[in-house]
Image (tube, rainbow, N blue to C red):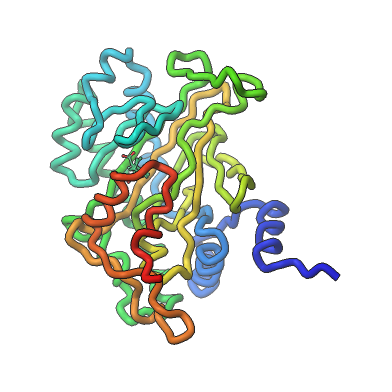
Length: 331
Ligand code: GA4
């Protein structure tokens, strides 16, 4: 008799019923358990009834589409994205490329207001939309992190959320625009056997370095999550929900109990895809280390303590798809 492993059962469940969808308006205790399971099994889930106002999302989306519709020469004026601003195709500093153009912004209001001048002809309107959006998604991220702290029985219920609430938090906002093929930023791999529109990697596979990521996209598909190997699960687009994923820092703090999910974005659609992604991060000087409640004689410490600044330095020295947490393992 062949006995299916827990991983096989988990993967089959995901393939059969899709990604976990958690209704945040349900009973708190139920929501907590569902989040725990999703973070342990996949490091990924969707939330509905999340409380982020529709008009806040709509204003941010409108600003995004307005910017990306500009001529390339106008958009370049808001670049390069080192560290913040407009970028096209180049991701990071080590040669990673994708069929994507983007705006990378720090969540700090001062940094947003400085960046806005080169991004919009109405910088006040742009920065208001960004600040409101960040405030709303940061609240949602904190609510989820408080539920996580509670379900993990961490005595300080704001131990996780306080890191991204901190005024010095290094949280980021990224707007990724994946234009349809033939729209100017197209680089087809001629050796590929796949039809022209089916193999365009918008943003290559990677994990997010931060604590928690909140992604909202328009009605165009593209996001996929990895179940290991070459098994990719498409996440159906749903503009009313947020996709949440565990980042490397949360994997380290939970001593590997939660998994930082590998994901990628394809740019195969004939429609423009716009995703708006909040990366909840600690301040640069904050220490990341497995929480004492997560370390037991049966589950010894997997990662050595490190500062967020140290982690970022390693992250930016490596390629997009690197498993950077391995550099911080104790064994
Ligand atoms: C992935 C998650 C975020 O988009 C990001 C990315 C960053 C960048 O685009 O500058 C990185 C990538 C991301 C991880 C590895 C490094 C850094 C590009 C890259 C090759 C803003 C982040 O924090 O890490």
